[in-house]
Image (cartoon, rainbow, N blue to C red; front, side, top):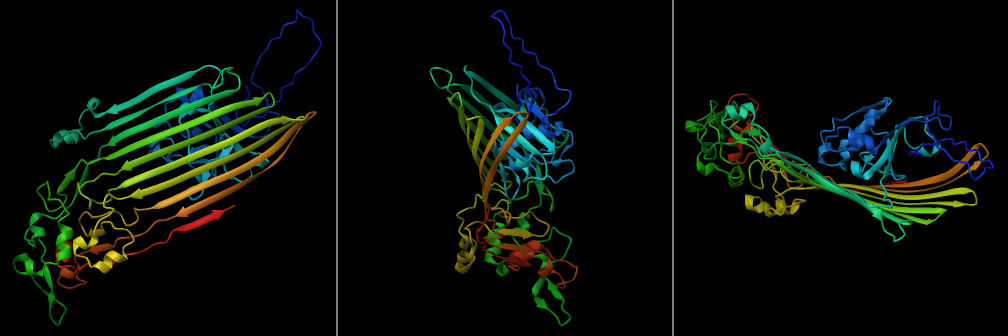
Length: 517
C-alpha cells in the first residue's frame, strides 16, 4: 500500500507463464529508502484511534515524529479540531510559524497566524505524513516541516461510526476547599459526539463514493472567581469602612493640601450622576469584607460543530476526480460574573473555519496530469452582550454617544476593584483566507521520474480590531488624596462618585485589508 506523500520503487518482472502458474504477493519494509531523500513519518488512522488524544486534535500526534517539539500545551485542543491556536509545533529547532499543512493537496495555512485554518477530526482522517528535511521543490515555500493530510473516502460498502465522549460533574467529587468553605460543586458538562458515514453513490458501486463526518462539542466549563466590588456604604458615599481618609478636591490651601470630608462621607449633593449610574452596575458583596468580597462560580459555555464531506468520482479508468468541503463553527460565551451587561470581559467569542478542495488526476499518453484548487478561511468574530447599549442612559452627553464606534457599555477600571464593561480590544472582526491553484505533470522514463508544475497562492487578510470603541475610563486615588501626587488617603470609588477620572479615551479604528500573492 502506498502512503501519502511517499515515493516508492516497485520492480515488477513480466514473463510468459503457463495457465497453472500462480501469483504470490509479499511485502516487507525496505531496508533503505532509495526513491526519495525526504525524512518523515506517516501516522495512519489506526494510530489516531489507538493513542490517547484528549480533545481529538490529530495534530497533537506530530510529536511522534523525530525532530518535532510542541510549542503549545494544547490546552485549547479540547475546543475542537478546528481551533487555530491549538496546533503549534517546531521542527528541528525552527520557528513554530514556519510549517506548512496540506489537506487533500491544498494548503490550509492562512496569514496572520500562519497556522492551519482547518484540521479534520480523527474519524475523518485517513492518514497524514510529517516531512521534516530534504523537501522536494514543490514544498519550497516553507522553512519548516510539511504535513500532508488525506481525508477519508467512501468505499464500495457502507460503513459508519457513532460515538459519544462524556464528562459530568455528577461523576466527580467536590473539591477539598469547596467542602471546607461550604460550597457546592460548580456545574461541569462536556459532551463530544459525532458520526461518520461512507459508501457508494452509484448503483454499480464502482464510480462514485461519498464520506460524511460530523463532530460536535457541548461544554459548560465551571469557574471560581473572587473579585473586589464596592460595598453598599461606598455607593452611598460612606467610606468609614476603610482606614484611609477621603479628601475633598474642591478644598485646597496654598501648600496644595486638601481638606478631608467630614466623617469620611461624601455628601450626596456632590455626587456625579454618571459615576452613580456606573456604580449601580456593581453587585453587592456576598462576602463580609471591603476587598476580595465577591465570589462567583459563573462559567463559560462552548458550542462547536465540525462537518466535513467528500465525494470521489471515478470518471474512467484513466481519470479520477474528488471534491471536499469542510467547516467548523465554534462559539464560546464567556463567564458573566456579575450577571448583567456590564460584567467585565463577558461576551461572545467565535471561530469560523472553512476549507474546500477540488482535485483531478488523469493519465494521458503516458503522462500523469494533476490539478488542484484549495480554499482555506478563518475568522474570529467577537462581540459583547451589551451591544446596542444607550450610552446616554449613563448620563453621558449625546456627542459622546455619536463619537462611539459601537453602542456598547464603556470600559471602566477603578484601581483596586473589578472592572466594568468589555475589554477595550475585545470586539474584533479579523478574517483570513487563502486560495491555492496548482498543476503538475509527471512521467516515468526508464529508471527516471520527470515531474514539473507550478503553484499560485493568493492570501487575503481583513483586520478589524478597535480599541476602546465606546470609551475607556480609569479611576484612582489621585483626586481624593491629601495632595494629588502624594500617598496619603484617597480612594478610586470616591473619585468615581465625584466624577473625576484619572484618564480616559475613545477611539475609532478603520478596517485594514491586505492581499499577498
